[in-house]
Image 1 (cartoon, rainbow, N blue to C red):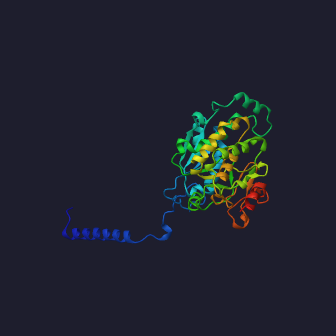
Image 2: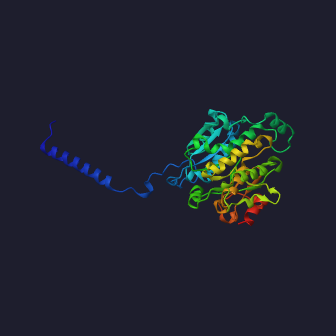
Image 3: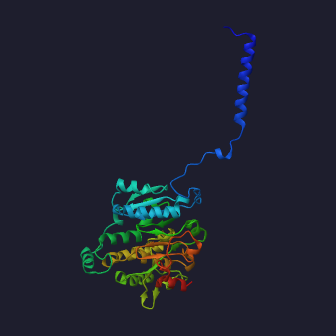
Length: 358
């Protein structure tokens, strides 16, 4: 049936009313309760935003690990991520003297949003340098009784950490590194940026646990250090902090645990440190004894830096098998899960010596 003029007008009115209704509805604001709930990320405290890293601050979390460390380094990375890096998102660099397995890479990447780069240690930085008498080194391994006495790879690791890691191609653009190792546990929330703190306060070396070295492993380290100071007096500033690492008999064994250290890499890349490492390396002490990177780093920091360039991060709680540090008043401050009675690294002789000299 054809439309009459009356029906046509009625149809137009209905359509006009319908359009007006849609326009009015679309301009009414949604009630608060109808807002979309943001999707939570994998962290419980997802209400905390990712904090912007300081511009021009080139820093990373760096570790030397093996494929067999997959579970223990994953735990360390997750702990540090939960306590610090989920809010700062610093990149992570992991190095290995063998290619990382796909299983390893997949596993560690599941526990952090941070970018992880995997690298290989190659060339002269790993293994025996040509001047080392390997028979003499073997005799030391077979007769010594101290921890890791039998291990070649442990000595390769100590030498690499002492003189090469900070010049690895993957670290060449870094100004700072925060060292991480397997089996490290972080007890407390770290709600500020230690890298920025280091830079703003012109600090060169940061530590948490100071320990006593096994003196059988460093029998001639101090003698060689004295020889170095006599040969390179231009590298030794008058206002150094050598009193921390020596007594009347020589080296007192005090060193900062390097399984946690935050370092301005200008220290390790300096001509003074380069000459010191090369001098020590030429003596073969990494293999004829078992010189560790921690005492070498610590003696170097005390020898080349002022006291006010070395910082004790008392507020960072962490442990590694053998010792743990629980910050002062952590039970009152909260955000820590450590037991001060069981994590008393501050009572170790070398930590007390540090406090005494402040």
